[in-house]
Length: 127
Image (spheres, rainbow, N blue to C red):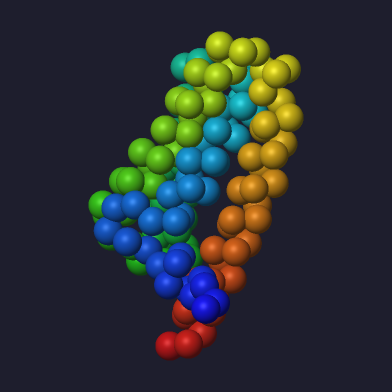
């Protein structure tokens, strides 16, 4: 039986499959700004602004994406979770050791974003 990817990517009240790209994006932001040698406070500040800004973009600019406030808050928390996990690993193991995983995470995140976007497009075109 084939997987219904439209249902799989459907937004839920709190946590859904979109939470995974949000977590991965948090890890990417932590890694990227660490690589740029931003200190922790600047890293978390810029990452937080970007994570929250994306939720505003989804709601106000991408007009078909109307998710519940609880889901938007969960997405922000998922981004912070990813940020925290990656920052912990960078500090514990060094960025040089984390770098190959960083590239892998970017590739996985791009794949998931495209897959989710295609499911979203299919869902809105069915209506």
